[in-house]
Image (cartoon, rainbow, N blue to C red):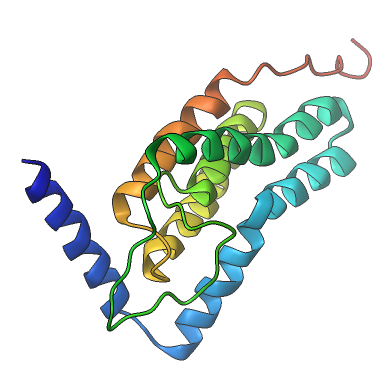
Length: 176
């Protein structure tokens, strides 16, 4: 059973590394992935919410920081599992990474922790937030940085972290 799952993981990775690759698509995936380094994209979204949504400033500030917090939690788990990044001899990765550890994906963890927490305070933005998070996740195996199971584990971990994050109360409506 374990070998079948590992083989399926490797087959899906190879499929994602060999289909839909055009220089423009690869460059776009690299730019998207780079914006997820250290949770920068999510910090930026939280900052925009902080600047433009006075009633929920504290919530936006908190949710903007959950990406980097999720990355810290993720790294602790990486140290336990110590799964190396994928190596496909004929398909080198199209990006760099701060560590050689792969499981779970920090980009996936940060993205889904942030999207989940931000969707709790701005439900009208949930489709956009989760769309951006999903796009970030797809870049990881597409660029050869993670096995698909790494990103699925990161999605599960991030969703849990984002759902459990305690949020400060919003300011009352003006005139309330």
